[in-house]
Image (cartoon, rainbow, N blue to C red; front, side, top):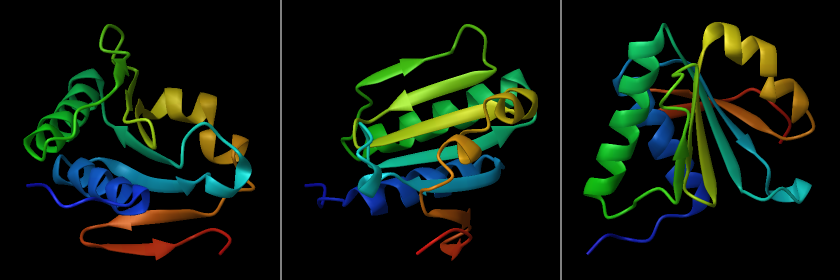
Length: 127
């Protein structure tokens, strides 16, 4: 039986899985107090199309092993931005150009954010 995860621990787990595939600039954005449709965004960058897909695949596969399957996945065709939607947590895997263009961290700049590092997180935004 899989123990229940809070949306925050789920987001951190997704971020740590992305790091296992050497994702860069892994950031959690806490949207719970902003009335967004989800609790957390996990945002990370891959170095190219193959890397973006490898990161997304790893998150989906490892979470599936825990009995947690995404509600929706999109972006596999272009592989510039793959979105993995777990309802309470949405994982965004970008290539660097697409991440800069959409700049979700700026768009959601009022939300607290944390940088994910292996097995730890370091607060970078508001509390």
